[in-house]
Amino acid sequence: MDITITPRRLRGTLEAPPSKSAAHRALICAALCREGESVLHGLSPSQDILATLGVLRALGAKIDLCGGTARVTGIISPPQGAACDCRESGSTLRFLLPVAGALGVNATFLGAGNLPQRPYSLLAGQMERHGAAFSRSSGMPFSVIGRLRPGWYELPGDVSSQYVSGLLFALPLLERGSDIALSTPLQSAGYVEMTVATLRRFGVDIEARPYGWHIPGRQRYHKREETIEADYSNAAFWLSAGALGSPVACAGLDPDSPQGDRAIVRLLRGFGATAGGDDPLSVQGGRLHACRIDASQVPDLVPILAVVAALSEGETLIENAGRLRIKECDRLAAMADCLTRLGAKVCEGPDYLRISGAPALRGGEVSGWGDHRIVMACAIAATRCEGPVTIRGAQAVEKSYPDFFTHYRNLGGKIDVL
Ligand SMILES: O=C(O)C1=C[C@@H](OP(=O)(O)O)[C@@H](O)[C@H](O)C1
Ligand SMILES: C=C(OP(=O)(O)O)C(=O)O
Image (cartoon, rainbow, N blue to C red; front, side, top):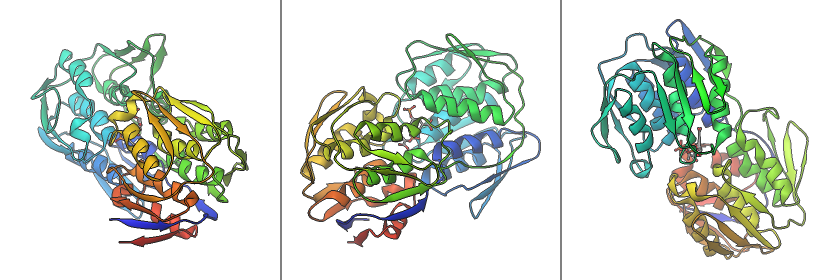
């Protein structure tokens, strides 16, 4: 789908969408509970969540999704083999690969878009040391056979936190305790905190250690009923629109959420914006100024922060951002390309973006790079462009936020589908 947005400010209050990260985690925990039914409310059928639902079903869970509520009967007797289609979801692949190993399912993992190019080999290497055998060490599809053994798992912390999260879901199922040790400091740490918090709610114990985590074995997941919390990662687009002069408020966000991306409020303050009210939460702009941003813990916020930087006076540096190149697209190249096409001055380095702010952008035509966060960032940039913005491949928003353009229109945005 290609669209043209006619620039105008957005206005109004909207319900923040449910967190995709929280939904993946709750679904996996519910599927690993052997007794009874868990009920999860407030799910959105984004492509990534449909991928996790599909793989959990292939691994033997029964999941009935109706009107945003999932009734999940956990895996009792896993199948011998399973075809696990992760679509474009890195979380689905890296969370459920170790889970398939812990269940002893011979699984074939398939992926689409950029997923086959995204890394999993360090995780596969650790699984191989503990009883799993892979048909290939990179690329997709691949097959994995064998059952994981408990033991000492060692991973770097600066490739993907999803490796750690995946092992944290899987290792409690093994017959003895295991450990995960980090060989380099953990980036995206907030996501691992979310994993540990979700596991605890489902009755699974994880012990923090100076080297990483100890995971007692023979644990049982306990059934639960819960509502998926609202998402700071996608609310960030609306909060940033607020900082850029659109009076938009987001309802439903938990100020005490374990989500690392709640840092968006602090980061927008760093540009000189002010935040008001807990619920609904809104951010107001004014004259924004450049700042320096460390992207290592908040990679998903970088596309929209780059837009804010392009409209803030002075030169903003977004650094420690090398891992953005291994997401749904190369997000550093994508944002440098899109913002330049819209009239901004951007210098792309190996692991940084240096962006010179201007009072307004020109507008123009951009590719969405097949990436939901690039499309949403460009749509918010359009609120401050002088001329129309055409976005090619805007349907990519369905990966995490299928209602994004409905909400955009509800806030007064003008979108024409080409
Ligand atoms: O665990 C999660 O839910 C996620 C972890 C992050 O990935 P990395 O740990 O690879 O940075 C993030 O970019 C992704 O969108 C969601
Ligand atoms: C990188 C993302 O997700 P995943 O890694 O799960 O594909 C994202 O949602 O921005």
